[in-house]
Length: 98
Image (cartoon, rainbow, N blue to C red; front, side, top):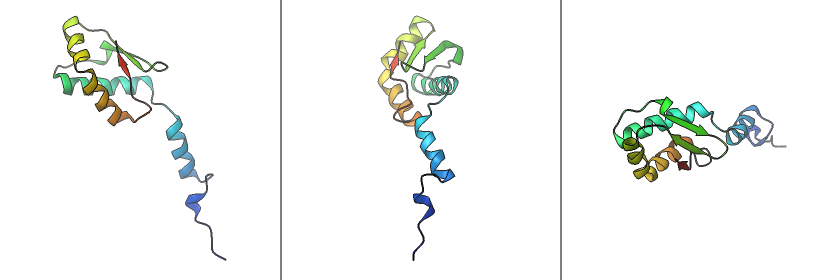
């Protein structure tokens, strides 16, 4: 009789952790930190985390900066969202900037 491979068991600790990684969303502050990094690279202007607010339920990032910087961020919104999607994953990235 051949033994069953333990990696196919859903109750194994490693598989259980992978299952919860898919379900758990990143904390609000970690998303804001990624937004600050990506906006700094794409726009080329240094921003700080206090200039952004993230709503987890609607996946919306609110921009609290000067209108000039806000316009540049919104102009490059598709590039920023694509970079955040790559960094944070398909289900956990912000979908809108306001």
